[in-house]
Length: 403
Image (cartoon, rainbow, N blue to C red):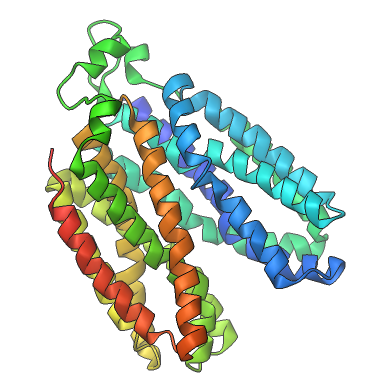
């Protein structure tokens, strides 16, 4: 008789698909709308680029309150709200007639994205898994990396129809896919007679009982732990490097002689190659001490930054893609796995919201600093070397994380 699949894995699949669709539009596919908007309205690239910052509020300002909301109301309600709101945001965006309306629609889209991206999806997966948390996070987070696969579809929709019709279709697609998937989400296994990883519970378990278990720490106690501060600092460093590379990879490669088409292919390959690390480092995190696996991932990330300094030789692109994207994908998965193992799951949403806020600080500093260095020196090499050094600091902080 075939063994029944643990329901938690269906939740992982649902979160994977939601992350894939949302990231393809909100993150990787947004670039496809730049030129049509500039052409129709005559806006500057700076004005359109500001929307990217507004769109990213779900990772920064929105992440903290969303973390509290998901712990209070559960992931299912937040994901349903997020899907509905993001769909409305995309459709409203299609009716843009002014810059103010454009920014307003982007803010609505960012709010919706906050309801069904990392803080919320990781929180529900953290409730359903313990021993297999690394693998579960790895599969779920691969949806974000796979979002790059739908970018050509978005480009094609704009070509066949126009950018306004494409946004309406994408908004309707958000509802068509996201609403049914939101009903697959179930907040805690104990409510359905399970324990994490699929063990059967003898009776329904109350929230107070979960909090009193080994490994569950009150939110107030978490805030007082140095290890939580170290994890926040590590995430800020990680995102500082990641956002700098993702933002500047095309201008950097162009500055050292690469054709724009080649640079575009490298930019598209980065999220896809990150899937390797999301799966492999997540799997390793279930077998070995997570902080050591995370330190190893940062070693690869630092090596990738060093290699990135010397991509003037074309073949060097390949070791860069094998080192940097998998390692930053893996550290993203391990961040959540360490948070779950070291600090429990009762306040997971709030804790992850704070960490995402720290990440957003690094995400603002990294691209800005890289741009300033290039404007000042006419070269990116020094900043890539500096970021490689920061990876060494991240390794030290990761190894200091304790229960």
